[in-house]
Length: 89
Image 1 (cartoon, rainbow, N blue to C red):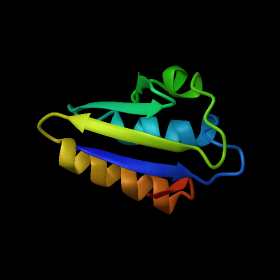
Image 2: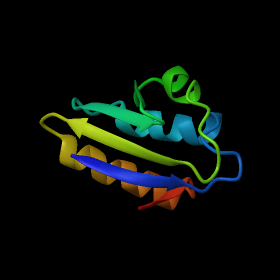
Image 3: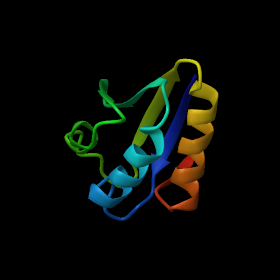
Image 4: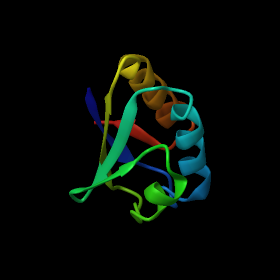
């Protein structure tokens, strides 16, 4: 399962929004990746996500595979929209 999001926070994906996303997906068993500019990192890794240097207006793809991937993706979408991190494309 895969979805694309546009990052709308004025600071991009810095520490606070990254921590919100990582803490939201960590309890799930599914493997989850964030892809930006053809580079993929584990969304369960704060350092991995922050190393991407994702700026405001950037488009990222989040993909998940595993038993609870559907629920994980719903959670990701809820967090991104409700916390003002971005919007679904």
